[in-house]
Length: 223
Image 1: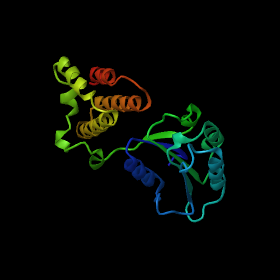
Image 2: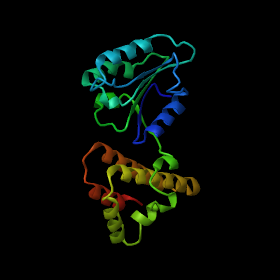
Image 3: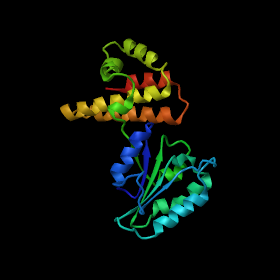
Image 4: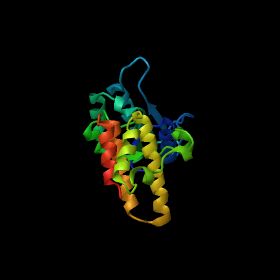
């Protein structure tokens, strides 16, 4: 794994699975080479003291693994001072150290923090989507790419009335559909469509963008 990573995604279970897959270590079983930092119950944020403890932990040699892992859960709850204290370590971590920042979205993370990390989106499994039966989820092409563009915009207007979390789950499912199409057909247009939908998810997560406008633009940009 790259030494400094941000794991993003709406589903907590998906984020946990991605972290454990990348780090090769269980989050909840405990290990001397793993330190989990999270917001304390009586605090409103993750403070600079906790981050300094994490840096000190990373500077020690591993106990039994090749690398030590520092996991910061809900990393966007770090104070500005805490994030600034972490910058140098993110950019030049000890050779035996891996740092994972975990959060639903990038919102609240400083640009200087994000620029020093590789971003990975945790994919939601079909079971974790939890939006009804799979065959009830609208197919991406029939929804956004019918021959009649007016029909596409009508369908996006219906989807836009759902809450943001449900829309994101549908978009994540559509990404899975396009990845399967890419695997079967190898058409690079599906790569572009995956990138467009991923960007739409990020906009929904991090801004107050109008859902109708976002989905309309997506329907017009997909190929």
